Image 1: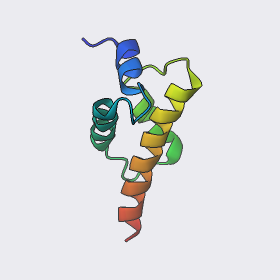
Image 2 (image 1 turned 90 degrees about the vertical axis):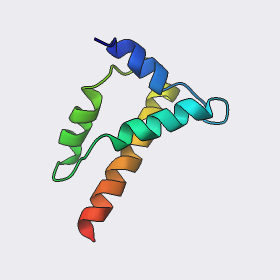
Image 3 (image 1 turned 120 degrees about the vertical axis):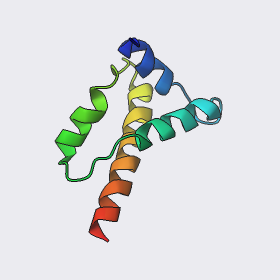
Length: 80
């Protein structure tokens, strides 16, 4: 079983310019989630249940930015 602390640290590593591969991994990781039909809080709980948030604010910001982009993408398709 993978360590959720290490998953969170790995996915949140940045900045994007310095770690472009990890940034792409985070983007693809977020694409694994289908948030269709879920409220914001349900989608966030689902996303956060797969790893543990790191303590650094910049790392959390990178994770939440990717989550928000994916959620917007899924919800935009539902509206069309």
